[in-house]
Amino acid sequence: MAKDQDKKKGNIGSIQSDFITLTSHQLRTPLSGMKWLLELMQKSSVGNLNKKQKKLLSKIYQSNERMIALVNDLLEVSRIESGEAKLYLQPTDLASVVRGLIREKADEIKKKRLDVEFAVEREPLPLVKTELNKIRQAIGNLISNAIAYTPEGGELKIDLKQQDHEILGKISDTGAGIPKDQQKSVFNKFYRGSNILKFETNGTGLGLYITKAFIEASGGRIWFKSQENKGTTFYFTLPIA
Ligand SMILES: Nc1ncnc2c1ncn2[C@@H]1O[C@H](COP(=O)(O)OP(=O)(O)O)[C@@H](O)[C@H]1O
Ligand SMILES: [Mg+2]
Image (tube, rainbow, N blue to C red; front, top):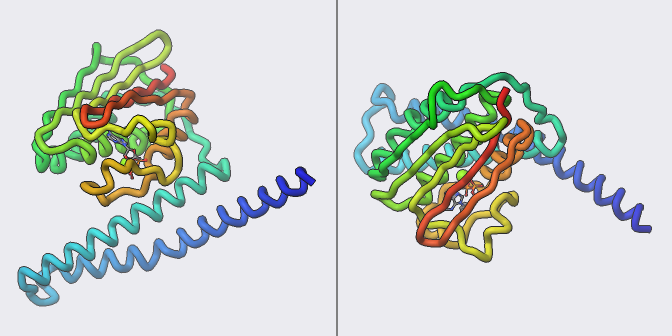
């Protein structure tokens, strides 16, 4: 009986994840079509828009971008769950990954007047074993979170150092923190903190689930310490190549 039930559950699970994969793929085409058309409309070559129209159009553009991000995250999750997300591990320079990400996010950092410090214990650090694009996505999400969930004028500190056969990364912020009673759910799919929902409506709650999967698939670990209204520090390790 129990076995039958398990089997049933398993079937439903895989039908659901096939369904999500197919639906997400189907959504991609119209969403990128919309993105392209919106970009075209924002160009003056199709006629001038007044200020109000421009503002509305940019809101539609942002909503579309959020939808694209959600669909991409859903696809990533279904790849992870189907076991397709095998990483292609190669020696990777973490310090340059972090530098690239900070440069990429410079506009958001400036807009929020955040003070960002990046320290590498000693350079060059040994290379780590991971897949470049996946680890960019993983660390990028940790940095994006630190930016998104820290109020204006806050501080971000990122550092990398060697510890035995691993590199230890640390990303800390002086932001909203994660409420104690919710800390066990942080890496769950779709978790979003009750304390941040009122000021940061963007987000899917899938970022940390994906981040953890990529770090663990590289043979690393991830954990955090957080205090509400004080700040959060995420730690991760990756094995040296
Ligand atoms: N640096 C941080 N400071 C405060 N809360 C955080 C931080 N990082 C993650 N969180 C909490 O964990 C939740 C899940 O993060 P994530 O999986 O990246 O999803 P998203 O950012 O899309 O909401 C966030 O919504 C937030 O409540
Ligand atoms: Mg996030």
